[in-house]
Image (cartoon, rainbow, N blue to C red; front, side, top):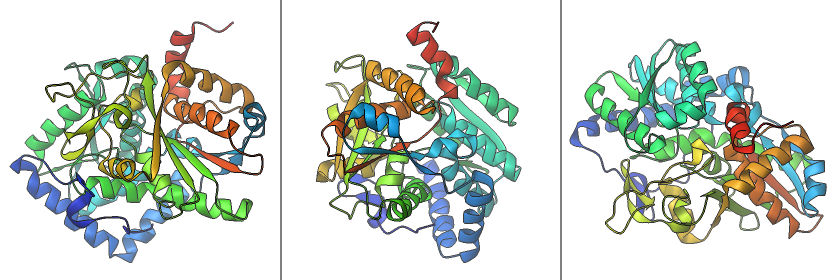
Length: 399
């Protein structure tokens, strides 16, 4: 595990980050920060975490060439970083294993989590099953409908799934409910936040656990290509998979970094979840970042065909990378993402998560404008089993 070399004082990334929470949570966040600092200085923690990544999660995940997708795009050579092959089917397990170890280190026995697409919920339930921790997951009712397979998986793994009926009944509302529960149970409960959002130290902590993606990609590119890639593309909701792969290349100016957000149905408010494209500075879920909000400063309703990108904010480090111009953030509409979902399945035999399909759609357009001797890496953040029923509904039954 590569320890934090990107963090700034007190969890700030330029003008973004910090800690905006009720007094009730300050002691728990201080405890987490102290446990995290102790863990980073403890070789035994590092060894146990890395052993689990290898023997339980199945790392390193492969970096594989996509020859037919490359031919379809007609430009750069396209490579897939296969996080879909990690245990539980997505990158989320990297973070939940790390935070479960911290939960045990703090002497707590109960874990809560929020989830949208269900992958973080499944990964949290998996880590809790592995370590014998009580687990409750908060999930919006709309996401429960479109991610029924992952709801069953969480229950099968021993977790209690709390269905949230408030608001838009999606990820923002699940996060609100989880935070309320944490305030009531903070003495014996750890909240495993699933992305690089929330109050300090969560954005740095989650990014560090996910940085294994970037380290592996760097090593694999040097071994297989003899050099670094020309471009890396990843989808961005809260932003953990993108932060995990981007952070190891931030200091390499010749590597273009592209984050793809959910363009939804249109660019009208309420029709998309393109936070960095359309948002403004604000505070959401404990940190200052970029937020989709109305003229009164209220958090906007958002939409995406992908439950994991259906969120009105983004991690503060992404907001900083956006403000600095280091990462190029763009959006892909639902229709293009669903098209890419089918395309990768048909051309490469890999059914991607709808979240990852946004990155695939953006990467195809980028590859077209690149030279054949250039290399583009897509972070395939998860597999699409969970989305098969929803995709069938959106596409109509396939003959």
